[in-house]
Picture 1 (cartoon, helix red, strand yellow):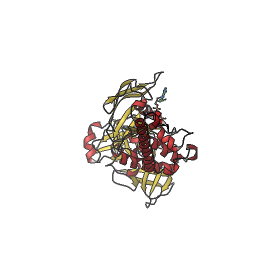
Picture 2 (cartoon, helix red, strand yellow):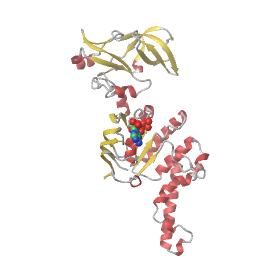
Picture 3 (cartoon, protein in one colour):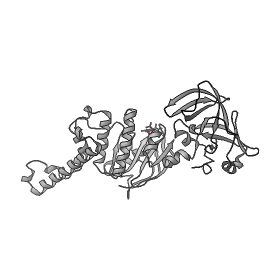
Picture 4 (tube, helix red, strand yellow):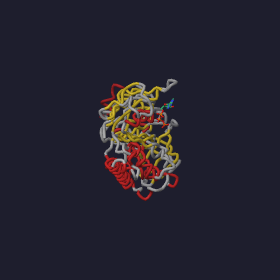
Length: 391
Ligand code: ATP
C-alpha cells in the first residue's frame, strides 16, 4: 500500500488538447478517492497517467517513495480495473485471475513434472510458488463469492460476475494501489448499487489505496472517502463527500453534486432594513448570519443557489416564492415537484409525500434561508457564502 501524489500534473495531447491542467492531488495511503466530473473533464486521462498508460506532459507522479513518470506500467505495482473488464476470453476464471501472477514467476521453467530431475531444489521452489498463487486465487474468489465460477470462461458469466472476476484479478496481485475506470457502468442499475456496496466492503477489508473514476456523482458520493470534482482538466474541489455537498466551493460543484440539482436564480443583493436578494421573481431576506458577511456585495449581480430539499410548500415571512406547479414525481417517502416561477424560471422542490400538492396549482414555496448559497456570476462562480452557511 502507498500514498499516490500528483504534483502539477498536466497532459497535452498531440493537436494541443490540454486534457489535464496542473493537477495537484494527494491520495493518502489506504484512502478511497473518487475522480468525478462530466464527460471530457480529464478524469480518465488522470487515472491513465497514474497507471502509466499515458505519458505525463508536465509535473510528477509519485507512488509510494518512487517518482514513476518514467516507470513502465507493469513495474508500477498498481492494478487497474477497466469498464469493459478486459478479461481473456479463452481462459477460465481461475486462469484469468492467476495469469498475471504466473507471468511474474521466476521459476516457471521448473514447473515440468520432470523438473526435479534437473534440480530438486528449484522444482520444490516452483511448486511452492504455484501453491501460493493457487491459495491467493482461491482466497480472492472466496472474498468475492465466485469460487463456484472458477472453471467457467468469461462468455458463460453475467455482467456482474465478469466484473467480480476483473476485481478478483486485481486483488490477487496485492498491489500498492487499485485504479478503477468506470468499472460499474456496464451493469444495470440494481446490480450497480449492489456492486457499489461490495466494493466499499472490499476496500474496508483490504484497505488498499484506491483511485476510482466515474461520471456518476451518486457513485462518487457513496464510495469515496474523498471526492475530487473535475471540469475542463482542472480540479474544482477535493473534499469528503458531505463537504462537497454542503460546502460546494463554486457554482459548478454545487450544480454537479446532488440529484435533482441545486436551483440557481440570478439577481442582486439590496440593502433595505436588512439584506435582500431580489430578482424578477424573488424577494427574499437573507438570514442575519449571511447578511453580515455579504453586506459589502450589495448592488452586485449574484446567483442564489438552493437545494430542492430546502424548498417546501407553504409561506414564510420574507422567504417565499410563488410558483406554478408542473409535474410531480412521487418517490415513495418524498415527492419532487417541477415548478415555474412567474418569470418562467424553473424550480425543483423535494418534500415529504404527506404534504398535499397537485399538478397545475399555483402555490407558495418557502425557502430555508439558512441553507441557501450565493455565487459570483459565471459557470464556475465562487461560493461567496461558503464560510457563512451552517454545516
Ligand atoms: P469520459 O467520462 O467521457 O471518459 P473523461 O473525463 O474521462 O471523459 P478524458 O477521456 O480524460 O475525459 O478526456 C479528456 C479530454 O482529452 C477530452 O477533451 C478528450 O477529447 C481529450 N482526449 C482524450 N484522449 C485523447 C487523445 N488520445 N488524443 C486527443 N485528445 C484526447
